[in-house]
Amino acid sequence: MKLTFERGNAVEIHAETGEAFTVRQLTMDRGAKRIGEFSLTDRRFSRIDQFMADTLFDENFGGENGNCHIAVGNSYTDTYAGDPAAMTGTLKRKLGFNDSALHWDLVNTEAKTVTAHWPTGKKVVIYENGCFRC
Image (cartoon, rainbow, N blue to C red):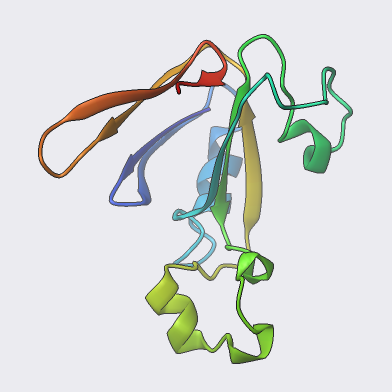
């Protein structure tokens, strides 16, 4: 699967197999094609060294190249550090939480280099060879 994002939305959707299914998933509602979660796992700190056939573990797989996982669709509000009772729809939108019936974790274990692009134009490599750069 290859997804191209612009401003947090999947604008191009391609898949070697199951492309029609993928498109249906990502168009089921307004938030389904938006990023709901993103993570980079540093291989030095993950104690998970083999796939478990359970996404909750596999999304934190360390492996040789570390991993990146992204969830399209719903953002889980239990990551909010404040009072959960205060989490209104307005606060969710203000903090950038996404709403959708979909929460689809996609895990990538390929070698990758991640570069941060600062508003000033500066570019800094923050992750490579499965590790965050210090």
